[in-house]
Image (cartoon, rainbow, N blue to C red):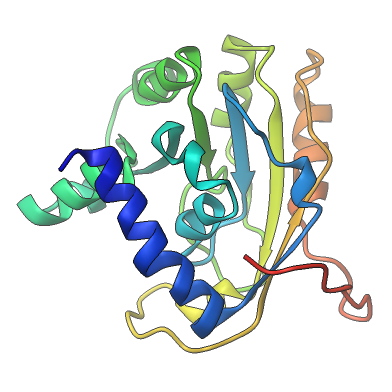
Length: 216
C-alpha cells in the first residue's frame, strides 16, 4: 500500500472520527481555505493536534499535497516515529536547533511550495501556552519573499492546547474552534505583513462569543 493510501486511511478512519466524536472542531469561514497549491496555511501552535486538525479541515482529495512543517529533531527521532511522520503524515522536517542559515533551514519548505504543495506552517516555531500567541518568527517573511505569489491563509486555533497541551499525551475532550482569516498576500512590506498576520492569529477578547457554523 502506498503512502498516499495510508495517509487517506489514517485520516478517514482515525483522525476525522476522533476529532468529530472526542473533540469537536467548529470551523468558521472554511470557504477561505485553499483548494489548490501552492499555498501557505499558517496557524498558532499549542498542541500536537494542530497540524492534524488543519489537514482534516481540507478535502480528503487534497491530502497528498498537504505538507506540515515540523521539527526534524523531534519527529525524526526513532525509526518508527520518523517513518510515520514522513510517510504517513507527510511532514517537511526542518532543523529547529543548531546552526544553519535561514535559507538552508527553510529551503525544503520553499521547494515544496515551488512544486505546488499546500504547506502548513507555524510561525511561532514551537508550541506555546494555551490561548496565548507567542512571538512570531520572521521565517515566514523569507518564504513569501522567495515566492511572492503564494497566498497565505491564516487560521486561528482555539482550545486544542487544552485537549493535548505541551508535555501531555492523554487527550482531554474539549470543544475547539478554528477561524480562517482573510487571505494575505506579500506586498513588499515586512512589518505590515507581520502585523497583519499577528492580528489574524491573536485570540479575540473573552467577551466576544463565537457563532458555531459547522464541524469537521
